[in-house]
Length: 140
Image (cartoon, rainbow, N blue to C red; front, side):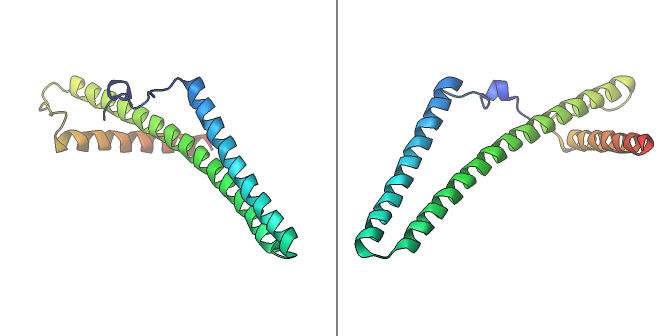
């Protein structure tokens, strides 16, 4: 697993404040487009004495798009949280596998990029999960 600090995946070219400003400007522009379309449909509905259903659909569509954007932002935060948790688990498993190798110096040295290394890593993750599950069952 690559370290995000080394790869720059946790960095942006924009400072956080400017990023929020850009997000806010895009949201305002999107709302202006929504209002313009709804206003246009409203004028058409008044002029043609109809098309009120188009106004209702435009308003409903605007709300649906805004709710969808909010869900995407929440999902992006959840993904970042899950990624951080997975990286933490892998670091812990690597440390446990390293301790296991240090405790048994007669064991063969495993290359960090070999299939055997990842088998040991996954085995360590599974054993930690089983220990956590047994601890949770005992607490109940």
